[in-house]
Image 1 (cartoon, helix red, strand yellow):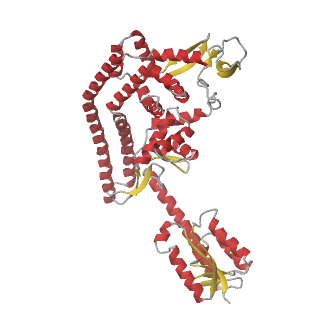
Image 2 (cartoon, one colour):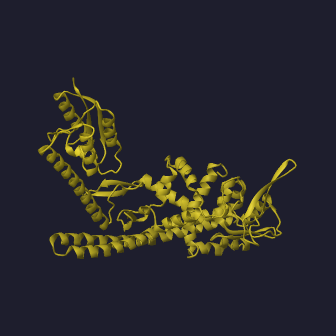
Image 3 (cartoon, helix red, strand yellow):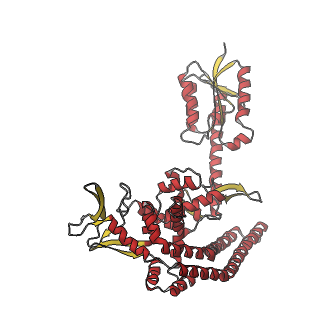
Length: 526
């Protein structure tokens, strides 16, 4: 009668699968061995699982199976190192052999041991187990040395994050390249979140609609905290600069981190009932929150806003939501620019862009030439190092110096590569949004109204029954000139790109695009 047996067929990784120790190859050899020795195979454990894992699910599945089945006395594997590559597994196998009366067959090593085995075979078993353990140790040491070398040279020693792909360069060297579609998704996520207009849940929904990708909130949070996207990689708690193409700027990354730190510390919660001004207004007397409250009068329901009185009750009037909306409406209407003047301004701005494009292009060429010059120096020094004319220490020191200069040039190049066309398109969007803000506020939905308020206003308080606000830049300046009907100074402000206005515009454009997109999607504007 055949003796019952199980087959253990394992590879550690994909590389072993491709280098001749494939699962199919092992199974073929083991089945032939079982036939030759009259073993009945009752179960096959076939899997990929490294012996260095602390929790080895599939391996323990085999161990527990043979412990439960006393009528299965034989375990057949390809080699000793398929059964054990660490002392923990070695103890488990000896336990099966001595306490559960299991017989271990290592076909390639021509080794069979059981509880009665002594002498040379046990010595052979222990020696092979020791050598397998040392092989694991060498692999780990090689991996650590390889990772340290890569990190010193600004390379990532593992799988690239979302937005990038591990591929080989033309020189057959492993490298990490941007994946165009995924990089666009990552960039848009940072823009949405950095502008403060979207929560991670809203970003998750927009990603599904606009890009057709489904991310968990955990994945979104991980991406938004990953410094790899602007040029720094964190490995084993230490930060290194990498040499791959960044997807976004350090400034945008830092902006997102600031938003994340403050998001859960807001004193107001936007959840609950859909009130337009929840969390937008504060009391001008005590600084406490203005809270909404619904009142029912006969057959109608009204929403009133009043101070929470958290710091002590005081006499302040309650304001109807309609009155607050009316006051905001008058403000936004005051930003309106006559269409004839607006078209003239946009035409002049467009003409100005044409004359500055040549200067921008020339500056980009000069910066790129400086960057390439440093790269040529690095390549030349590498050849000198191989020839032995310079030491490795000198090469590494100069390489770090030149890489630092290249990073400075990359920063300058990114700033210059914000083309004037982008600037003037942003100015156009700002002017048109300001001019149409009254209409947009009227026709937009609740969330869109809140986004407009957050984009245009800050420090909104209620004093003596009136809403008092501060317009953000550059809308405060636009409001000043529209009230005085001074169109020429307004045009000159944008033509000369004043320092205190220019950064605000670049921060504002993605949010303008998001608001306009939402309004178009909701059919509020066409």
